Every structure is written in C-alpha cells, then in structure tokens.
Amino acid sequence: MNIKNLKPFYNIETNKDVFLSEEDVEIDIQGQKFKNRAKIYCRLLPTPRIVFNFELTSSDGQLALMSTFFSNNVSILIKQKSIHGHVISYTGNVSLISIVWVPDHEPVILITTENDRICSIIFHLFNFKDFVGKSDFAENQDPISKKIAFIRLCWQKWEIELRSLFTTDEVFKTLKSKGGFGLTHLGLVRRNDNSNFTSDEAEKLLIGLRFFLSFAKGCWSNPSLAVYLDDCDKKIAEFLSSPSETWNSPTSWFDPYHVEQLSNLFPLFMEKWNNEYWGSTLKEVIYWYLNANNTMRGIDAGIILTQSAIERLSYEYVVNNNKLLSKNGFKDLRASDKFRRLFSSINIPVELPSSLENMKRLSKQHNWIDAPHALTEIRNSLVHPEHKRKGQFRDALFEAWNLGLWYLELSILRICDYTETYSNRLTNRVVGQVEKVPWENS
Image 1: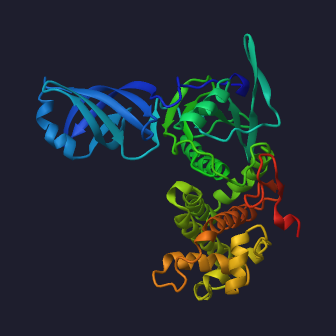
Image 2 (image 1 turned 30 degrees about the vertical axis):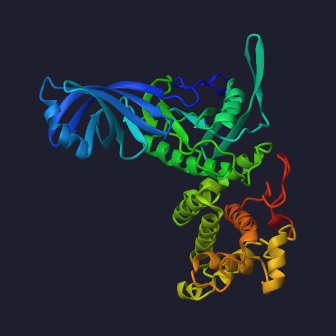
Image 3 (image 1 turned 45 degrees about the horizontal axis):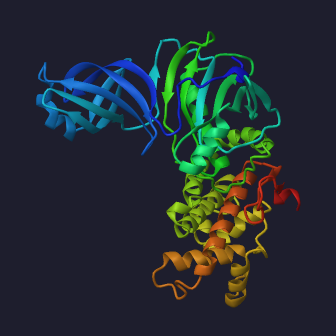
C-alpha cells in the first residue's frame, strides 16, 4: 500500500455520523439473549462516540424486559467478543423500539478473522494541525491539482506516515467557521521491513501515538477508526475509537511549518513512553497538560494543573531517575524549590522573562526572586482561601498560565532528550517562527 494512494476506509463527512458496518450481535439482558442486527456508527455530534443502532420487537417477549433493559448495563456479543455498555436513547412504540447503545469504554476492537498477522494499519485523524511537510506531493483530480502535506515518523522498526487529503483545505475552512469534527489527515502504520505484527503491538503503538500527536497539537488528537489489514490489504480487525475534542487551535510547542520537529521528537518520545518508569509519568503529565492548555476550562484551573504536572515531572526526574534527593527530602521542599531543582538540572532558565510585564511588576513589588517563586505565589493565591493576597494577582493570571505551560512543554522535550527547534509560546506571534531549545544555547 502506497501512502500517495491511501484513501479513507470509511465515507467521512464533516460533523456527520460515520457509518462503519452492520454486524450480527447477541444482546444479553440479565441472562436473556436475543439475536439481532446492529448498525455501527461513529457519532461526531454533539459528543463523539461509537454507537450501535438496533431494533427490538414484541414478537418474542423482548418488550417485557424494557424496564430492566433501560435501568441496567447491557452486554452485546459481537464477533465472539462480549462488550459492556448501556442504552443512551430509544424511540418507537409498543411493538417496535429503535435502540441506541454505546460501549462503556473505547476503543472497541472487532476481530474479523482469526489471523493476527497484521501487515499495516490505516487510521483517520480528525482536527489535527494544518502542517506543511518537507516531502509534500501533488494529487490530481482533473482538472484540479493540489499539494498533499506529508510526514514520516520512524521509531525502531515502526514507520508511521501522515498525509493530508484532497479535501483537507475545505475541511479546515468548515472547522474554522462552524467547529466540530472533520477528517483532516490519514495515517498509515507499517514495519520498515514489511514484517507482520500482532494486535497487542498495534494497540500499544496507537496509544503511544495518541499521546504524542496530542502533545504536538496541544489538545486531544487521537488516531481514530483504525483498520488492521493483512498483506493482501484485507481487513483483519477494526480498532474503533472516536475523535476526542471538538475543533480548536491551541498554542503548543509544535510549529506546523516545521514538521521536522515531529520527526525528530517521535523516536525520542517513544523510547521514554516505553520506559518502565517514564511511560506512566508522561501519560499523567500530558493528560494534565492537555487539560491545562484548554482555555475553556479556565486559566486559573490551568495554572493549578500545570504546576501539578511540573511537580510530578520534578519528582520523577529528581527522586526516581537521578537520585538527587530522597522521597522525604523532596517532600520537604517548597513547591518553588521543586520547580527550581528540576529546571536547573535540565538547563531551563529560571529567570522571569522580561516580556511578562505584569509578572515583572509584581515581582518587584513582592520580592519574587525568580519564575518558580512567582508561579507558586500566584498559584497559592488561587488555591488557599485565606491567602493574604487572594485576588490581587488577576492581571498576571494569563501570563502565569502561559509561562507555566512553556515550562511544562520544555520540561517534556528536555526529558525526551530533544535538541532541535520549537515554537516559543511566550514570544512567537506568527506561524513559522521557531528557535532552538534553551539547553542547546547554554
């Protein structure tokens, strides 16, 4: 399979339900089982989720179980796999009811054959950044020719290729005007030696890729609706997961005009992701980062989450990874000292940037000695109800939020041993403006 010829596996239109398949299912309602046909969709609005639509009739006494059905979890057996879930809506009358059922957890993995020898994976990427690749190519649909953005990510034997679509420009226009969910890119996963791999290996890679792409975007951006193929490009299984977050364009360290940033970070990130200790830490920290970077959740909450994430990174680096302090020694430090210990150890400057005018002014007024001191004082004024300066730092909240995220992004990059360029959220005002990470300039 060639990335240039790759097409969406499903018919996907912006903000419309995506029909995935129709399957035989067995519905288990408190031990009573009914065979049925279910249509499976990826619902995009108002909340993205995988849904199963099916009908129940009164012909075999099914409706007598309705009160039980709607008040309890209901399992579905599909392709010899039992999936737990619940009903979210129903319509109909006394003889026929149309049910919408959702699984309790995603992804839903549907195995089509017993063959576990996967050769490639196609996944669909919604709402990603509109990047410009270094190896872009043209695609023709007479009489129009368009440039297709392309990037390759490599780690060990894995090769992940991302490409835009012929319709990507129009999708971005719709997303910017109406919001929601649109298919912006496709992904292809293979081994560089064309060897086969298992579904367990595939699942682990897709989860790591979800956190990597989300860290790059600055909000949740996961490989959705993945399809596993054999060496004849025949479907073996479906890894059904819906997109996570409605369209927005948050600031992050990744500049879409410099896709080499993703290529350079990916293998470093995946090494840490698969490390026994760092993997769980990155999962926690990136989860907090993505929530903190969403201004809709409030910048005051973002300040608190960001500093919790920095403290978590500091503990892992200072105590577990480098044995610079004992657990009790770390616990006894003030929050600002925990930050200072991490930043100084990984060569990130602790001086308060001169561009943060409100924080600089407050620093002089209150004798804050550096950025960690300023950040933790502002956070303390938010979380402690009896703080003597509660409410006095409101003019600096945005700057403190942005500065904390800058430190968090840099800390993750440094811990991954990244040495190239990044987009500095404190100074960059235009797409394409990047600079070297600070530990390479020290």
